[in-house]
Each structure stands twice: as structure tokens, then as C-alpha cells.
Image: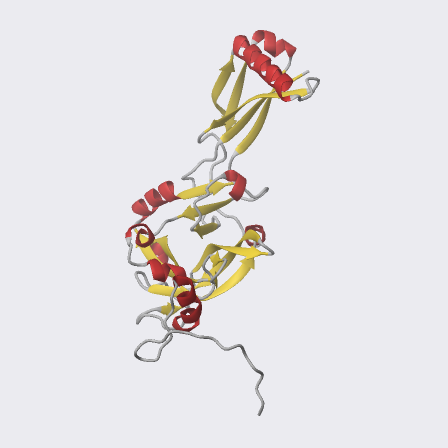
Length: 297
């Protein structure tokens, strides 16, 4: 049978007639497909389902007091700009593995896998069919996107055992979608709550409010009272001198930047009051009060 001709290549070989790979990148490309299934002894191969963007996952989730939607993430960006999804409330747990932070011998392995430690409350060890959600960074048409995977463990979770979920790790522009290695740790409720206070962010629980300042308030100052659950819990006073100074500075900036000075509304300042927003279903966290002070003519 005839075979199509292929360009000849010259490659160094070692004493065992194996090709010598001269760079980490070439070594990765050649060996990745061979080592992907060579899991260490005791590793469990998990199953996963890609739900799609976070918004799609939230649409199918029923929010309740004991069932806040939680996503585990390797991202370092906790900003609301990246993580807020209009109209939805959820929690994201940000966790950097100690392995990746301190182990300098795992460079090659980190090229092949993405490691993640998932922390659960001890009581969840007995759950018959646990499900955990993780986010994955992927690239589509040259753009970075984030999708959610639902991880299934095939029964009760075994703590301190390594699970592998193929192609669920963050995508590398060269290596593609890497495998996700998950190690589950459990903590008693007190330590778990402490862990969440340190490592979790809640999105969608902020309260947004606008305080309009007219000519009367500009001459007399004003006090903004805010409440929680129908009860007044505090207030903020703005004296007239501060309001007038802010307006003068904003108008001067408009002149310098060439903005229209005839704008009906001028934002004087933004305030973020920690813990003055909406309370989460579990009661352990409150969002913030995001207050805009706007001068209106």
C-alpha cells in the first residue's frame, strides 16, 4: 500500500533510542497524551458536567436558606466588576493551594494539571450524592470566558483522597484544557465558618442607593438614614460646606476635561458601607451599602 510522503526530520536520541526533547514545551506536547491516564495509585476518576456560563448555572438553582449556590474558584480577581451577575445571588470561594504556593518541585506537574483543594463542613461527608461546582477559564475565538462545571464524586466524598476530573482545569493557550485534581478537606462547623469568612465573597447582596442633592440641600446639608429589615440602624450627615466644595471640584474637572458643564446630574461621590447591605440566607454575611451622592439641577 502506498503511503503519502512526509518531510524528513532529524532528531537526537538517547542511549535507549528515545527522542531527546530539547524544551519544556516540546516535552509537554509529546508526553501529555501518554501521562494523562497514568494516575497515581489511589486516585479516583470523577465525572463532570459543563453547565456553561455562571448565569446559566444560577438560573437552574433554587435559592434557599440552607442552599446558597457556591462556586470554587482559582481566580485571583474578587472584584464585583468581574463576578457580579445582575439579578442573582451566590457565593464564590477563592482558594490558592498550598502546593502551588510553596512546592517548587512541582513545576512540570503544574503544566499538566490544575490542583484545587475543596473545603466542606464535616457534616457533608455523609451526603450520599454530593455535588460541587467549580469555575474554569477557557478561550473561545481568542476571548477569555468562564464556565461552571458540576463535579460528581460517585457517592459519598472521600476526604484527603485525590480525584481527577479530565479537562475541567483552566485552559492553557498551548496545552489546552488541563485536568483538574481535587483534594477534599473537611472542617468542623466553627473552623468552616472561619474559612468562609477568610476565603469567600458573596455577590448580589449589596444594596444600591442614590442620594440626590438639590439647591436646598446644597445650602442646608442633609442626613441620609439607612435601615435594615425596616428598622433604622444608622445615618450619614453631609454638611453644606462639604457638598459645596465637592460640587465646585467636579465642575472644575468638567472644564479641564472638556465635559459638558450643563449636565443635569453630577456625581459628587461614592460611598461603600461594609456590612450594611442585604443579609445572606445563612445569616453569616451581609452585603455592602453602595451609596451614590448626585447633585441634580
